[in-house]
Length: 90
Image (cartoon, rainbow, N blue to C red):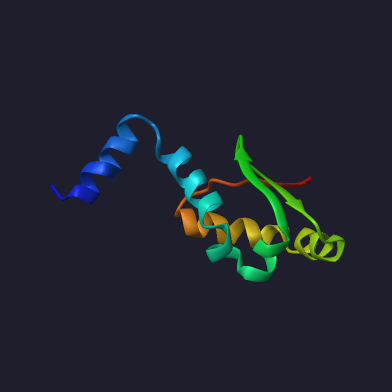
């Protein structure tokens, strides 16, 4: 068993995989969404499968609101599971 397999097994056994994936998305927000969006993001956290986003740009908020489903799909694809079901703009 490789180290990677051992860690994945540990995350599954202790039911920590979802929390790990949530933390990964938040920690790699700039990488996933790009620098322009990350630069305008003031808050990002996940709770109960909802992504909460604080933005300091009204036009960007409107743009992301229209692309909400695409953003959810991108984040879930990154996590390789359905971790986000809704986006809430703060």
